[in-house]
Length: 97
Image (cartoon, rainbow, N blue to C red; front, side, top):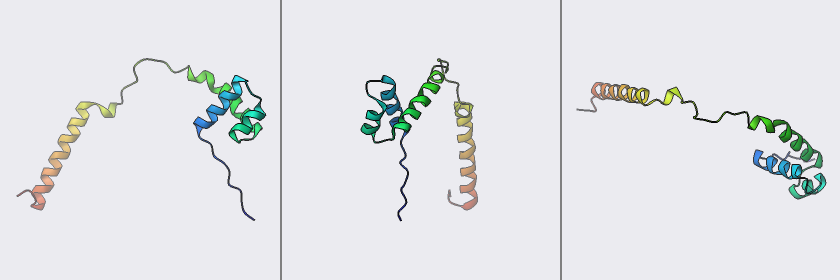
């Protein structure tokens, strides 16, 4: 007996199906047939999208916080340290002669 493998859908596909369901131009059954998913799944994705829609607008706009690990001074000091280590290794191994 062969096992059926579950279908996995991308988040983009789920969002597309849920948005169609929210628009209400078609019934859940019509949307389910169009996207080849179960009508219950369409309803679940619709409820999930409606529940999480408010969180999209909670994010404050403005400049994104800078990542301290990408500061130019820190990167230049890391480059200098690595260059010194490379020079030392070349000197010890006799490659740089």
